[in-house]
Image (cartoon, rainbow, N blue to C red; front, side, top):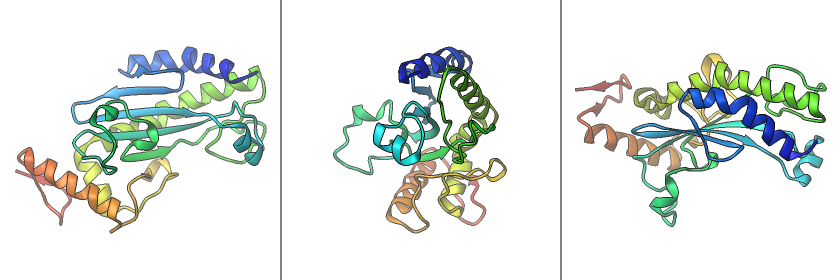
Length: 208
């Protein structure tokens, strides 16, 4: 069992259902859905040997990260070229979240890591990851790709990478009143105004 085996399982098990939903595979680990105003990202993160040793798991175990990149938000890091933004890495996304597993694989304690040790656990892990993607990941991506929902989160919610499904968290947005959070709020307000909407800061809804 190695990383190539896990990549093959991801391609065969996860690839077709995501393709049916409009996602395209950039490689064995990254899937993208292009929207008019945003890019949705699903990433299977692997671990290097050092991190695997620290976390006491195999290096071909994985976690599943979600991201939403809003195309209208300017570069927060000025030196990044515009052409590099078209298919962003998950960690470059403005909204980010980690999925949790549904099953206990070899009783590994971390809820956000699928621990793979052999061919059997690989199949179980990838199938369970797909279940998490379809059950919680896709709804999260749809919810926060909505401009109203995204703006409301920026205005009201603390950063939380591992929020529960009922009140899904959002990471990558910075703490309340942080420079990053204020930068994102400014970009959203400008986008709303440019498209004929005014952001109502009392109701957090858009008004004509």
